[in-house]
Amino acid sequence: MGQTDTMLSDRETEVLEHLQRTLNTRDIAKAMDIRISTVHTYLQRIDAKQTKASATLAVLNDIEYDARRAQMTRDDREGDDDE
Image (tube, rainbow, N blue to C red; front, side, top):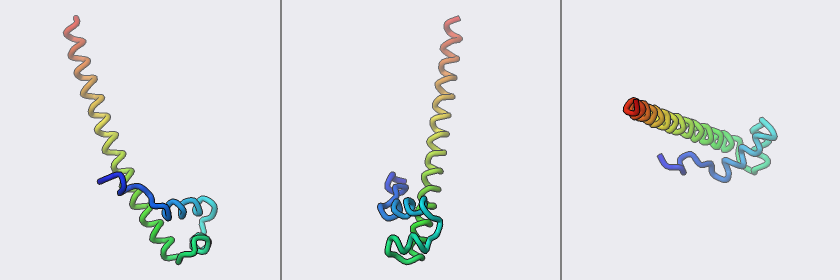
């Protein structure tokens, strides 16, 4: 899973910017000169990318946690040698 899998396209970003101003997909479609169904497609893609990014972040957090725990264990063992 590459970074581009979760990066928003310019049009997806534009939909989000419009979404911040209004929750009406009809208004977004009109402002962007696209169909309402296209707005829905962009929203689905945004949601999928957000889900993917969240899952990736969770895995990275787990890896970081495991690395910290392993380091703490090593530090504890080394501390025992000092006594």
